[in-house]
Length: 583
Image (cartoon, rainbow, N blue to C red; front, side, top):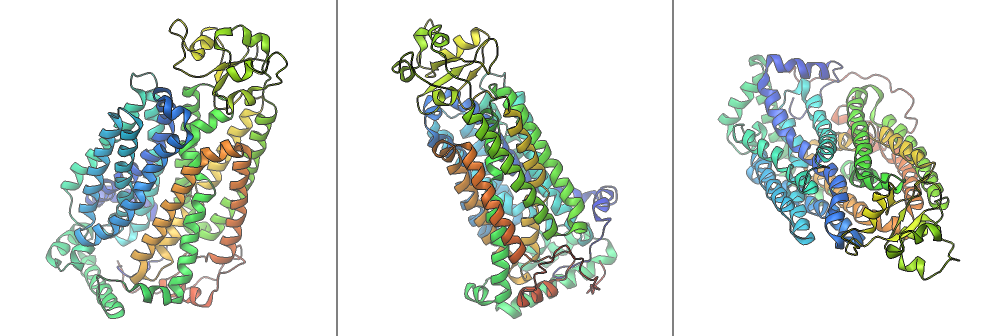
């Protein structure tokens, strides 16, 4: 019912799929809009693999960490603007128009990226893609929610989260498919235009959100769409609830179109809700998830994986675990509760980040030594910085690859034995061969991002555990809590504030990760994320209420009284939820 809270139906997830047989029109609406989530996820995942090959093609990108971070983070910067502008666009022109605009911008961005002759055009394309992703990320769940029957609304909106993680998984499959194709990264980024084009065509044939139409006075159009969504016996109740909801907004705010920001900030329940909601969105990013999703192949290389293809394959595993975690969340969110999932998720993240930090510390301090005689076998490619130190130089692999623009060519016998330190500048060639190609020609492994280690696998285990713990809790719960914690009349504007905070935090983390790994090392960077996770755990225990199964009135009362149930593991006494109408 519009404006009400429906008691949890444990069979809602199953009913969501049985609905496909009874009313395929609703599924068509939901999954057509859900492609927006797929676009969001695809862009998040595809850049991590494409970046490996962009570095190979553009020397300036390979040499300048700030360019790598800009290629990743400019899409996030665009998403901040897209999300902020998308809120106005949704209210002024409708959800359908906003999704069509997002698809158009995404498609333009994909073309610019695929045809980019230099890093500047590539970054411009990333900004356009960001505009589209920002609009789609806030509009898709809104459209699905407003065009879904109440009984399955929660399950259908939750599938948007699954499509995001599914898009990330798909992006890694695409990355692997194009590793041997000429133009590699151009295909990876260009393919992103296909789902945008598909959604654009599908949305042209679909209606506007019935709620938006009703708010704009186009009641006949709204009723026609509602009759396609709801069974005949439920249509009148839904229309009446929609009418009551809008009348309540007008009565409380003076207008159904505008929100008084001063009133919002003075309202105790809204202010406390914003602390919890915005805090969760900020911590979701600052515990480090998007460093894993954007840079997972690079992290695999930092752990000592030399091959781009192997790094991408391992990234596919992390994306698959992330997608599985979103399914686990859909199943447990109404059984376990929001707060308990968050606490368990953060405890797991803290332990996993501690393991990652320890593993990377080991790879840094126990990397294979550089041998002068091994290096002399490639005398024409000897690293200048190493050569200037002479035979007495006490270098290891990590010293070779850090700050000297050189690479480590591992021993042919065992990659953990002493190897050679060679110049990694691809513009420096002898007989048309680079040092990397010469090293590979002798059957050796070539390292420029990380070093071989006998415990590198431990870092990959830590990475997998981190995803397993993060995805069902911190990955999905912040979005769910933000959809429940605000009074109905303020839910749109508060949700927009929280989403913008998420994107800004995303930008800060994405823009700083590689610089941090160079400045303080990978181990200390992940240790920092672990410390932030400890702070996040304290924040959840103190400031985040348990909203599982509560009607809006009780959520507001709980925020007013600050009754946040610190003993979250104690089961709350069951309360009767009064239904305002049957739907």
